[in-house]
Image (cartoon, rainbow, N blue to C red; front, side):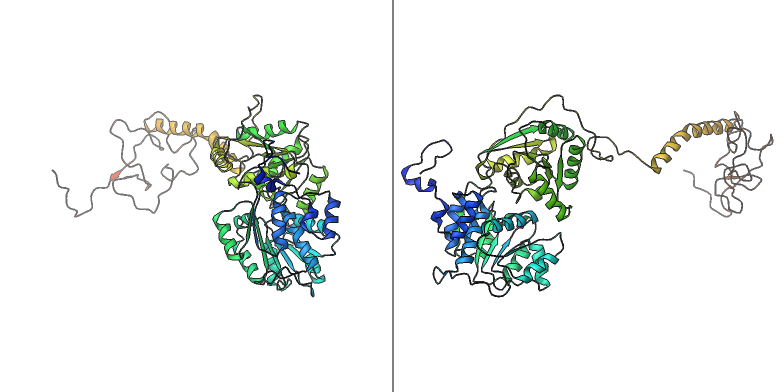
Length: 537
């Protein structure tokens, strides 16, 4: 039986073996594994499984490159379970996995996120249900008490995130001296999250005679350098082009204003075709904001991101799987490892900063050969991210016309300056500003009266608008008392000793001061005694 290519054509005779469909029974897997696969409803392997399982069964190191949703977890889980059961050597270069002695694990799988670690553990439990193996899943965000108890009882397989595993290693709780199979899943994501040094420390604690398997969705130079340092003559397996989207995912693009995205999302979610949707945002606060508005508009939604506790994240995923929440809003923490059946739509509310994350996001739909729809929103500030995504995937995303009756949402934050103008004042600052605005006309009136008084048209500047002296008036009727202070050069001094104005008004323009009728006696300070006269030019 031969499969046809995407155009429906039968491949040439020389290439038919690449398209040949092989059942799991021909991969020489243990009978208990075949029974578990039959219970799960799996009959034929995917491309990555058909290529990766045989060399792993032989004990070879492997470097696999495949996109999400292609069955990478089963590609290494099935042969690992087989090797742990059989313990039969193939040759001297690839010895068998020794039986479990004591409580030390024999296989270690590292994953970048807690969700992916939990799902890998579930896959091992499903495929090894008839094998009699024991495993433990180790990740942070929860108490390590139950993880310690599981390790103390003895396990065959440990699935862990690097951070929590390092903590347990430093505490002497986990022993990696008997590890025979070492797996790095989603290695590119672990490097992006800064786990390169923990990976090297963990690899140094594992025996050098191990079998190492490295899987990655992309193959940058950093991953190649890591593979060269960890793998020995690996078998290289690649499925699909690097950073290519699944062929059965229909991609759509809307050019929308940032404040129109929420209304556009709710409009699209009203369609009965959207049975289970996953919405990706760029930030954690953005995920909470979108989820809150969806629930406010009677659209059941739940959010997960790095700030949520692990127990909450597990409950959120259970609610999403069971259908209690039709919409799951998440950051890129769910772009990898989220394996939920029946996701019909993926919405990129914000385009990712890294173009590779776009491929992983939309890979949450269209899994296991199913079809799906990926819809992206792009505002004026995200055009550069869109160009990088299209450059990476090697194609353009079809643009859909935006509905003309979409309203503009209110600013997401009261202090946001992206769509509103200057930042508004609130609290005591706003009250002081209002009080100052009310006092401005009064101050201008007082200054006008004071200027009129200086020209003989009104009361003195030492009096208010009602003719009463000001509270801060000094002895000479001026604003401040200067008693006991020396007068400045070039100034005039009143007879009462208070500091006066800088210069007397010209004759004929002197108005009445703060005293009745009589002119104040003034004395002009000239140059110091004995000072040389200024030279005239």
